[in-house]
Image (cartoon, rainbow, N blue to C red; front, side, top):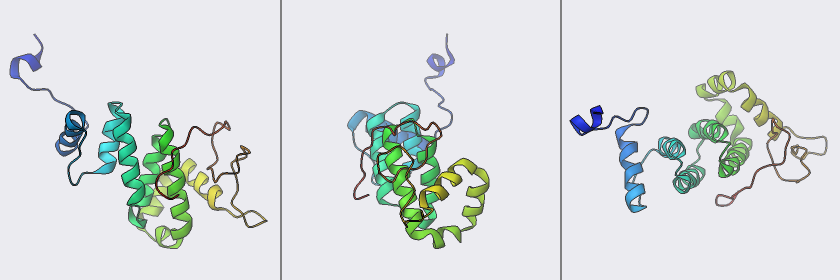
Length: 165
C-alpha cells in the first residue's frame, strides 16, 4: 500500500501551506482569501495548470507594481513566458521600469537582478533604449507595439491587456 493511504496525508513539496490553502480555496470555490502571495500562488497555478487563477494573479501583480516589487514580477513573468498573458505583464513591467528607472536602479536588488538575469536585463535595456528618432525600439516584428525583443525572433503570442497598459 502507498504511505498516503496508511497515514491519511499527502506531502506536497515546493508549496507553502498558506499558498496551498489559497489554491484549494480557489479550486473548490473560485474565491481567494483577502490577502495572499500573488507570486507564490501564480507559480502554484502554473505548476498545477490552473490557467484562470494564473491570469487572476498576473492581473493583481500588474495592479500592485511598485519599484520594490517590479524586478521580481518581471523575472516571474519572463520565467512564465509559456503563458500568453505573461507577455503583457512583462511589457507592463518594462514600461513601469522606464518610468521609475532611477528609483529601481538605486535598489540593492537591481545589482543582483542584473547579475542573475543577463538575458532579461538585455531585453529591458533594448526595450527602453531610445532610437535616433526618440521612440522605443520595436522588436522588429512589424507590429509597431512596444514589444520586448524575443530570443526566437518569431511573432509575439496572443496578448491580454491588464488594466491600462
